[in-house]
Image 1 (spheres, one colour):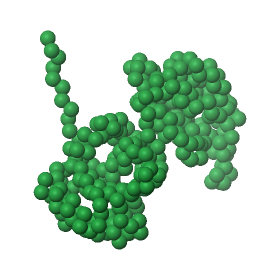
Image 2 (cartoon, rainbow, N blue to C red; image 1 turned 90 degrees about the horizontal axis):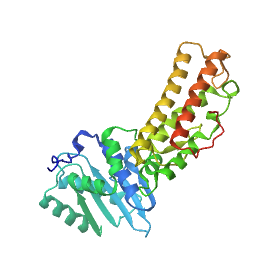
Image 3 (cartoon, rainbow, N blue to C red; image 1 turned 135 degrees about the vertical axis):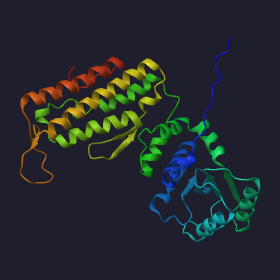
Image 4 (cartoon, rainbow, N blue to C red; image 1 turned 30 degrees about the vertical axis):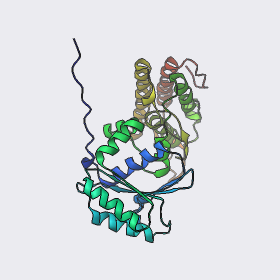
Length: 312
């Protein structure tokens, strides 16, 4: 007996604001092609019609205009292309319009004709449905994360790193890459010897974010690089175990926060804003270390090849 029919529900781009829509368009292009440079002008609010400007590997330039509106008009595109031609980047080789809604054949043809008339050699127009199909073809994980509400970075640099996921990695390779997150001082320095408890808390928060998004940061918030996220693990059992690791990290962070709010963990009181010195009872330090060791034990159950310096 055949199984029930399943349907892929369309993405409701109309629910996105302009900023969110541009983020997704930028992330898609960062992932789908290799660029000499790809800049997101739209996030500054003074883009001069250049929401996104890219230089491809072959040197050709692309200007991408994001049109998150129910009805895309020729007047809108005329205004945007006029601004682009006045901007410092010059005339692009390709002017691309990515719309969130439908685009009629007549409007599409008129837009292309006008863009060619003002000196741009190539123009293409993507409707919302076309953009969705491109996403499902080359950026399914981007679409899944964005629509399902997984943390999505704001900054263009982090967004570009976030977009570059390699679906060819094996689960073992993914877990080996994740091991870097746990072989760091926050996971093996005794709590009483931790030089900066605020940095310790930040390191735990950054590890949780890296597992969920793949954006790996140092304690000073500097982006170290890009690793696979737990969402890329193919084996369902391993994926569930990694979720358990993430939950253990969340418990560690929550315990620290609770003790800080209760005043059990307290600042030294010197009134120096950047002073790293905190005080806490020994039993609180031991409990934090116990929760931290639990995180490492859970991770080793997922990836026995991990040999970090933390306790077990």
